[in-house]
Image (cartoon, rainbow, N blue to C red; front, side, top):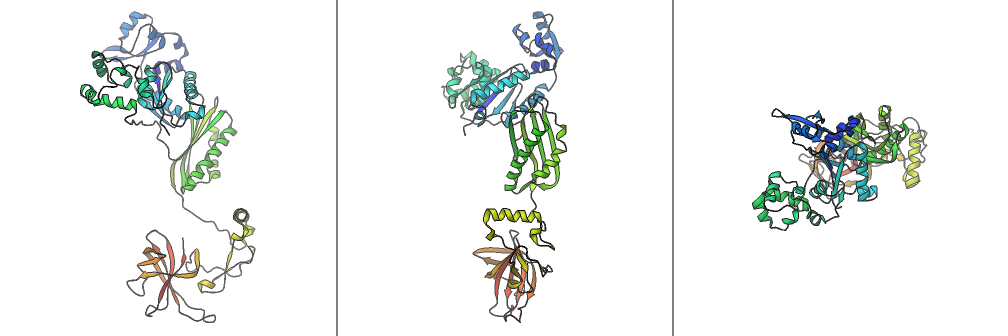
Length: 499
């Protein structure tokens, strides 16, 4: 996917914010100012003041010579960071990757996003319209590189869209300052008569580096796409996050609940495939007025039960105020943990199909894989492992014998024990190593032996000494030695798997 970036320039960022708070300011010229070495210096101007020739860096006293009735408001330290941070989060509705470009811009990685709005032109127009509705004057540029997008946002004509791989040609007509160069470097270029990018873009890089330094080369290469440029998102990209955009603003609680349920199902399915569960989740509602409503929940253990999670969110959804409507919903699993598998008891004193949940499970399995795939086993009155169970003739057959639970038994028992090769340091001890189907297993833990004698009234033969062993991967096996360890022809077998 080709990279595409949008640079947004808030030409009157701070003064627009003051106008949003006090509408009357939109009809009069005013500036923001802060003290500097005992003098008040203009730090921001609104469009009406700029039209009269007032600019940033001018002394307030000089500005009042131009407009005697000029309104001067105190600037607020740290205001650009605060405003751009909020505006950047608001832009999440357009793309998940938004970065601040201090002191008066935003950078958006919009790769693969524009088609959702019907193309790049409609995408740019939509963003411009939304900022205009919020009361901000913006200029934008879209290109393959951050440098070119930034250049056209500030020095292009309106909101410019540069076609892919056309940045080198498009940059030719722009001034040197469009490359984000230091003012001193721009002055040196002007002194040499190099006022626009076309005057030096074809010069050897070695000459430009020697004259203007490495930073100059870096900025030029970044704009042309010869050097990659990274941005730091205002919100780190979440590993587990789902988004849902509404075609029309949502203003009802029912609509919010439907959006949350859809996001929960999608996110839980994604986590389930990775054997992860939610411990902390954050549900965000982005309103059309630029504000965000947030609801967070936590769980005592990791879960992907969407119904349970919805009930936790449901307790707090009434606190969400949709105002004029919500246009974007996001659900993020901020903290996840591995799921600890557990199994409920389905069969107890009664036959399994008397349990509604089990009956429904059997119906689903039979419908998908066929009834022949479902088997039930019951305990038999035998100690010899191969005869200790029997297949039920029907799923409703009652248990006449209880399962023997005094000793651990594997979940999967092989119908015929499989021969294995072992290495045992002491003949009567469990093996240190065993090889099964060509794979070598190192025994980390072992328990046993448990001796099981032949049922002499049914057949004759050697006894078995069973061990429960665990290998280096945590898998557990049921193995046995056939015959006494002093016998010359004793053998080892694997008979079952615990997990």
